[in-house]
Length: 334
Image 1: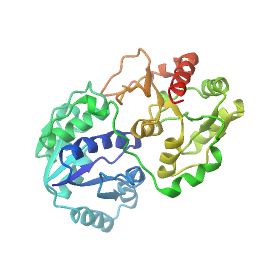
Image 2 (image 1 turned 180 degrees about the vertical axis):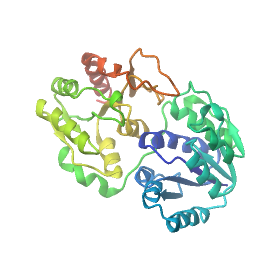
Image 3 (image 1 turned 45 degrees about the vertical axis):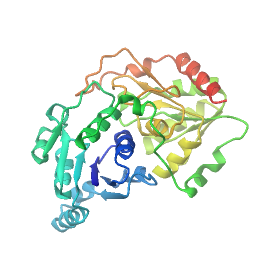
């Protein structure tokens, strides 16, 4: 059976959506799976044995160029990937549903109440109602399974089998940052939205209390500035170089603990079976918490359709709560 998944962005959502692959693979072990993603995020899919073909699209570049020839070339490359027995749009936007239609085959997507853009439904042959109350990882797995006539139980992803992998050379870029006499903890101080960020001064105090080999990652200039601010206040902190996605997977995979907000690197930890503490305020808990992947959620009520960008309650999570949980997880790993 030839199956195509479409989830274009963002990094965290692609990671969470990828968990559905293991659900499908258990029931349909002989299936051939293709995944379509935006080029700047597609490397997160590399080295996954459940994916036989990765299709990288660059819609942002096409939009910038406003070139008809580039649009035609993109259309042709997508059309040549099919035909598929099933195409599953895990994104729910107009652009993703159009891509699903170009791929060919029976197209499946979220029912109207779950779609980000209602017009996406014009390009689906079948839709699946999925509860908004489920964690995002379970919503994606429910859509994938039900589109293929399969069952899905939430406990299948609590925890998931590790499904993010990297190449042999991807660890080399950060080899010098790992110590043998101390446990390595990765801090993720920034997310894709300011209201999800935990304060850098609190991260610095946490680092000073834990006294381990503390690393901080970053993906852009603002994140680098925040990482540097933490390092200036905590002598045990070292700022990692800017990493590509496969190198980032390798770093997370070698760490003893990852602490951060609702963002890609913390989701990498969950998907890799690495102990983690993820901080949630205005956003819903999107993973299935496990004994080693813990969450701290503020009492804020979450608008599942549109997050309250003025809600910065994640900043109010007490440092001692994070420190105590970190020590507990580190002791479990001994």
